[in-house]
Image (cartoon, rainbow, N blue to C red; front, side, top):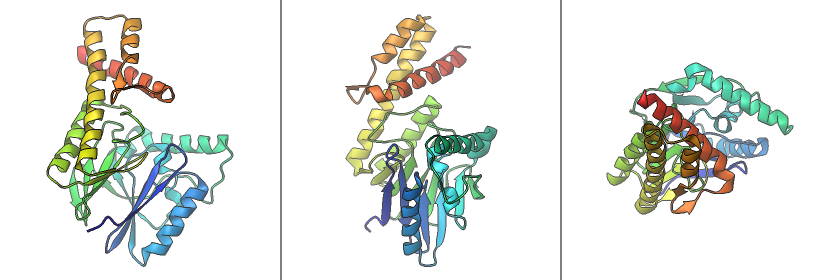
Amino acid sequence: MPQSYKLFTSCLWQTTSAVVSTEQRLYLFDPAYFPHEIEAIADYVQRERNGRELILVLTHGDWDHVVGVGKFPDATIIAQKEILTDGRIEGKLNKAKRFDGSYYVVRSYEVGMPKFTKFVEDAQDWQEVFFLPVPGHTPDQMATLFREQKLLVVGDMLSNLEFPFIDDSSAYLESLEKIERLVLLGEVEEVIPGHGVPAKGREEILHRIARDRQYLLDARAVVFEGIANNVGEDVLTEQFSQLMYDGVSIDEHLRSAHDQNRDQLCKEAISQKG
């Protein structure tokens, strides 16, 4: 059957908010970001809902993905259970408030703690979807598979705009394998990332998986081998700066994220070295 979804894309980082329609429910993912953009999403949901239950799924708890929840007070809210760990979501909500305050953004609803209905711990079927934890970018990231449509909403990974932003590189590699397995089994034919445009078709999805995996492997090799061999910090920093993504040098506007990846990998390597 044809994909039955509407994709809204914010002017902030091309953050995506997908609305996926099924017979009994309307699924909304990560409503973002500016008030007029969220108003457009809410208007669409109201027009299309037709008495169906509204399921609001948070792919993860980053501030640009959770800021719009308050606009949908009667939604059934679902997230991966790690979203509550160590005050994570409270910190992200405060960051959203600081961003809004800095740019004088005024909203018609409160940016507050979501009233969660369900937490997902492990991979599971629920109603007409399959929830799959895919940590790596964040500990709480979760993908949602619409089996009938062969549509996977993944959160902040497999973007056409950016390389992996790392919280845990080993977990990230494992998550890529999980998604690759679904694609190779023919269960996924389209992927909606948290930023940018969807990947459509097996070839494009596998290409995005392959380039993200290669970046992670190359980055880990530089840092883990460098620290194991007691390479100096300046040398390691220079080697890491020379890494490429999909055969192209890292864009200047993404350099800070690349540097943050280096710092995270250094922590992982030092921890592994003991």
